[in-house]
Amino acid sequence: MRQQPATVRLRRLLVMLPWLMERGEVPLVEVSERFKIDADSLVRDLELVAMCGLPPYVDEMIDVFIDDGMVMVGVPRLFTRPLRLNRVEAFELLAAGRAAMNLPGSDPDGALNRGLHKVARGLGEDETGVIVINPTPESVGSLVDAASAGRSVRVSYQSHTAEAPSERVLSPFRVFSAHGHWYVVAHDDRSGEVRTFRVDRVSSIADAGPATASPPDGLPEPDDWFVEGDVERATLRIGPAGRWVVERYPVDEVSAPDDDGWVRVRLPVTSERWLERLLLRLGSQAEVIEPHSMSSLGRLAAERVLVNYR
Image (cartoon, rainbow, N blue to C red; front, top):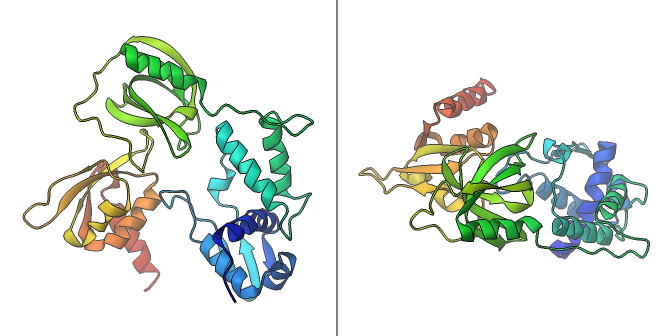
């Protein structure tokens, strides 16, 4: 049977996953009949879902299992966190969700449609169904002005890894748009480093006087990967057979190889769980140099795995 286009499969999953998550455990045959998809195609789609997490890292996987003719779907932690979408992201989600609601198996009274109604209300949809959005946050202009005038700004910033906003003083150097988001490259007084922040996560902004730092030499150009500045970093020493990490994940720094071909790599770490998995894959080809609190993660993870095979 010819496989359907990825866009069709994705829209179907947008409807299917909320329905499955509400029920927790459903016979495979019932899912197949409800969404008018043959069992083999259904299994292939769900197997792909089981490999999805929080990009660009596997911070939390979607729990999907198929066993003895039953489909079991858990609600991962990443789905229980409040979504902090800008208006463009919310509109894109609304449009995709409403298109998916026209597919077989959609539930007008289900979680997906209830959520879409809340998104529409939040965007200010009126009785005619019209939504007006401005894709450029107001704070973009303030940050551009601060960068041009050599001023610093005091901001309230909500990181995706923190429960509450943090107060920071930033000295902006560059403001740019990429992949549907606005970013600011700035010196962060809290960390003492130049970092990249998403502008839509800034909830308040005020002048804080002259800039506290000057733009560094060779300020890097925006590229295809952006990792928020307050994500914790780790420095690893990686052997020749493990240097694929540099190509696969965004990294801050990579040293020149030493005489044995080993390099030092500084990279963002969204969770200890993700770093554990990476260290298990690298095996003897990696060691954590800093922070010291993570130096034993790989060894402890390996010990837990070995216990399961004794």
